[in-house]
Length: 121
Image (cartoon, rainbow, N blue to C red; front, side, top):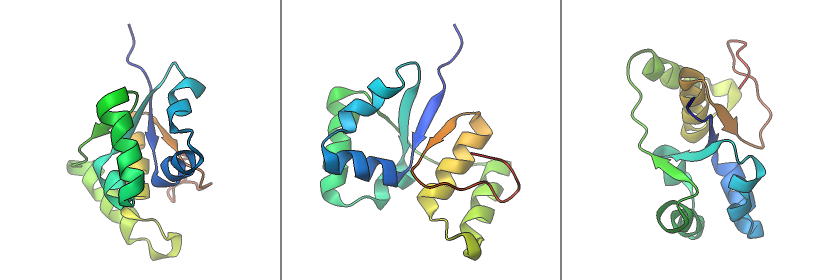
């Protein structure tokens, strides 16, 4: 069986769904995919949102937490994205884009951006 595509959640999506009380619906929107959040994204959240997210990670188990430690070319790409001042990319957004690109997954974000090298995310 092929591996499920991961939707890598950026902070904006987590915040919006958590504030509305609908974070539990995300896995139901695209049930054929798995939902993940990178540690660097979780670290950006306010404590109240972290508490909601942690409930989904540790109790409901419908979102997975991935410790983000890029290596090699992925690390270089992450550093490049976070250094592009004109794009105003934070560490979490840069991590999501890089992780998704190198693992052939999808970013879940409400920001509409295209990768600076022309790769759509």
